[in-house]
Length: 256
Image (cartoon, rainbow, N blue to C red; front, side):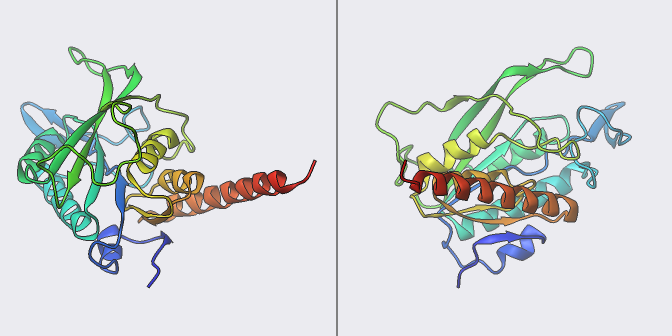
């Protein structure tokens, strides 16, 4: 059964159709819960306004901390069912850090490596007495051998790949989705840790960046996106990119 492709559906429902260990690699970035804030020492949901830290058009991104924790716990558990290797891109923020620290504890026996994504230019803080944010992390979970730092599938030579990656944020594809990671970041994961022709899963596909990376590097992809607007925009983006790749291949075949 070939499930490769892009689907407009909830990822937890979609992953029910994926057989155990049938995916070569997962690369994804869940919502960061950016709009859960602190007021008078307690968590609260801030007013959702069009500003630098509001990343999604149709999603408030403000789950209570325990709900955010439980959601990510279920997602990571399901990802480790369908794949041995999971790259989980997150950023530690007020609205998620307690949940993320707890998740690291829960999955400590599956945590193989932590990659620091240095975005080179720091994001200016929007509050007083807050440090600017310049990095995110990729939590690498391995379901079969997390004790060793050696990867069973690695396409890089010894001593050539650091666990600190300096990659600029990249341009936003749409003003309605501000949480898109750069294609270069996704390409770095799939080219170094997935065999050519292998299957890469992104359960939070968003605007299709992981799929673009797979198309560029000769990998297959499975993607889920629950938001209809993002799914439509991503589908259009992928079709345009496929057309550009085909045009390039046609040009290469011309005898000049």
